[in-house]
Image (cartoon, rainbow, N blue to C red; front, side):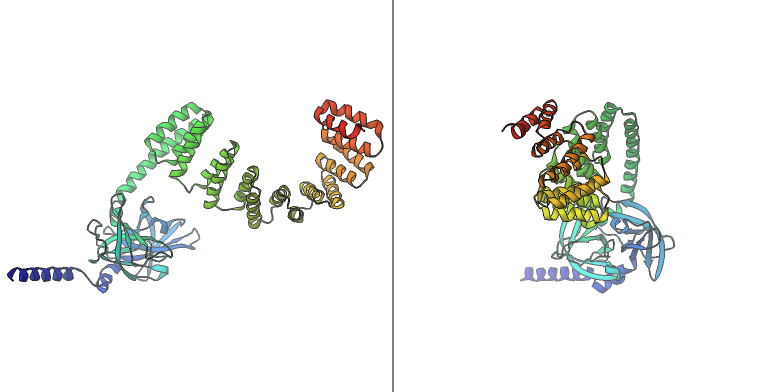
Length: 497
C-alpha cells in the first residue's frame, strides 16, 4: 500500500511539473509576438513584390526565409505601425535562411530554443502575418521530425498560409524552434519549418559560402581565360581539378563539358553537362543548350526531354517552336503540331510559326488546316513568298489546282528567283492542260538552276504532252548527264511507246 501511495504522489508531482512548465496559447502569444515582424520586398520603383514574416534575433537582426526576399531589390520591415528600411546581412539560399539588418528597429528579440529536445506530439505555435494579417497565432503539434544537416526539419499541424513564411515557430515555452517555410496545398496539415539551428549557424555558413564563391571566382576567371585562348587540353585539366575541388559547382561541370566537347569526347561531354543540371536543375539555359547539343548529335529523344525541362522552367513561344522542330525531326507530327500550336497561341503575330504549323499539317495530311495556317501567315505578311508557295502546295495536294496556280503566281511575283515555285507552277499548269504556260514556267526554273533535274524532267513531259516530240530526246540526253536514274525513268515514261 505504501508503494502505491508513493507512485501516486510521484505521478501527481510529475503532472504538476509538466503543467507548471507548459504555457497557454495566450501566454505564448504575449511572450513571443513582440519579436515577430512583417517583411516586404519591392522592385526598383518601390512596387511591392513579396510579403512574408520575420523574427527578431538576440543580435537585433531579423531572420526570415530567403524565398521571401527573392526577386526584390529593396526590403523593409513593418513593426508596431512603423516601417523601417532593411538590407540583407547574411544569406544561406541552400537552407532558405536569411537575415536582415534593420537600423532603428527597437524590438524584443526572441528566445532561441533547440530542436534536439522536441518530441512528436509536442504542442507548438506559429506567429506570423499570413496573407498580410499581422501577428496571427495558429496552434498545432509536431507531427514529424526529420534529421537534416545539423538540425531537425519540423513537420507540424499548426496551419501555415502565404505570408507565414519566415515567421516564428515556437515551442510550449515560447522559445523559437524554427521558421515556417512552406506547406503543401490541399495537403492533410502538411506544414514545414526549418530548424532554429540553421538560424544560429547562419553567420558562419554565410562566411563559408562567401569564401567558396570567392574561390569559385578564381576558378571561373581562369576557365574563361583558357576558353578565350582556345587551349582546350588546358581547360580540360583545369575543369577536372575544379570539379574535384568544388563538386557542387554547376559552372565547373559546365566548363568540363565544354572541354570534353572541344576535345571530341562526346559521351563524357553529355555526362558533365547532365551533372551540372543535377546540381542546378532550374537552369533553363543549361537545359536548352543540352537539348541543342543532343539535337545536333542526332539524339532527338534526349533533345526533346531537355527542351521539355527548359519549357517547364521558362515556358515561352520561342521554346515551344524549338520543341516543335525536334518533334518534327523525330517524326512525331502530332506532338510537333501541338508544340507549334502553343507557339502561335502565345505569339499569334509570328508568320514563320504559322508556316511551320502549316507544313506539319501538310506532312500529316491535314490539308484544310494547312491551308488555314498559311492563310493566317499571309494575313500577317502578304508579301511572304514562302507562305504563298506552301499555300499553293497545300492547294495542289487537295486537288484545288486553280487556287494552287494563283498561289504559285503570287510566290514568283514576290520572288522571281524561287525555282521551286516556278517548278510547281509548271506542274499545276500541266494538270490543267495549259502546256505553253507550263513550258515557260519550267524554263524559268531552269534559268535559275540549269542543273535542276526535276525541272528538266517536267519540261520534257510537257513537250511530250504538247506534241513537241523532237525536243523530248534533247531533254533525255540532258538528263542522262545530270541524273542517269531520272533519265531512265523519263525514257520509260516519255519515249517508250
